Length: 166
Image (tube, rainbow, N blue to C red; front, side):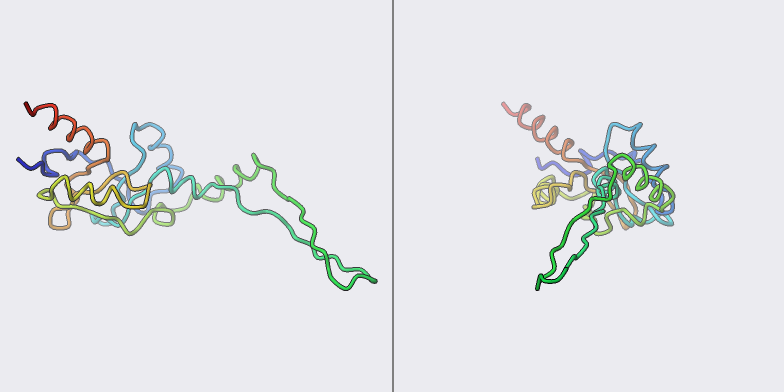
């Protein structure tokens, strides 16, 4: 018997709206045991937002100022770097600047999906790509989000299937 996505997926999917603010979604994410949400706009899947998207958003920006200095009798200028960043302040400024942004500005847009009738092997093909950030696959039925299947769901299903064999 082949395992199908519908046998393993979580049907009760928690989502966020593309217009939700980053601060609101970060708050929701901090209270959950998972690390991402499908993003809907007018009921249609338009992306996924994950912890990785937020890490990318709040990585310290390059605040190094390069100043060329060339004084006679030197023929070439020498560039000196001045670090203008204050790590904690940078993070706070990044957070304040991004808090009111819409999730649509930080989400991942090109999302692989599967149907409920797809096999677990189809999901494995998606999860085994070179992108280490793909940990969940939305399940669509005629364009409607009907579930989500995670890497953990697939591993657990394969373990259970193997344990049930004599």
